[in-house]
Amino acid sequence: MKLSSPPVAEFSAQLSLSIQVRDKLSQVNQAVIDIRAAKKQLEDYAARLKDDAAAKKVADAARDLDKKLTAVEEELYQIKNQSSQDPLNFPIKLNNRLAALLGVIQSTDAGPTKQSNVVYEGLASEANAQLRAADKLLKDDVAQFNKLVKDSNIPAVTVQRN
Image 1 (cartoon, helix red, strand yellow):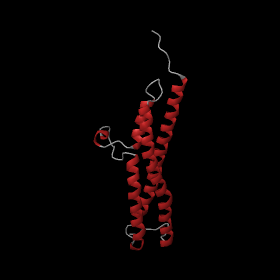
Image 2 (cartoon, helix red, strand yellow):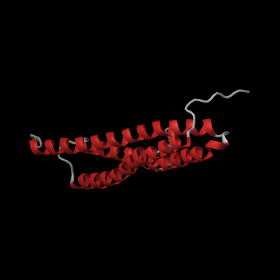
Image 3 (tube, one colour):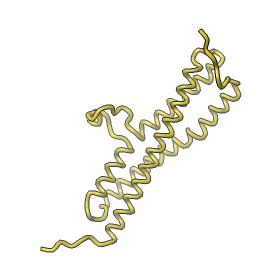
C-alpha cells in the first residue's frame, strides 16, 4: 500500500502556525527577560535605600513596582519550578503552554487541526494581555519611578561607612 504525502498547503499551514507560535513564545520569553532585568535593578535600589529615611518613598515605590512586575512575570512563566517534579505541583504558564502547542503542531506530517488554531488564538490573546501589561509597566511605570527618583534628588552613588 502506498502512502500519500500531505499536500503542500497542509505543510504551509503547519509552518505558518508554527512560526506564529514561535514568535509569540519569543515575545513572552523576552518580556520575562526584560521584567527580570528591571526587577533586579529595583531590588538593588530598594536594598541600597532601605536604611535611608529620606528615601523611604522611593524605596517603597521600588518595592511596589517590583510586585507589579512579579505579578505579570508569574502569568508568563512559572517561577516556582526548581526541579523536574515541580511542574506536577505548580500549574504551567503561558510560555510552557505555547511551547507545548508548538510540539503538537509539529508532531505530525499534516496541517494543524482546527483545535490547534483555536488553542493558539486563546493563548495568543492571553499572552497579548500580559505583554501589554508588561509593556505598560516597563515603559510608563518605570518612567514614573525614574521621575520620582529624580524629583527626590536621591544620590546615584552612596558610600556606607561603618
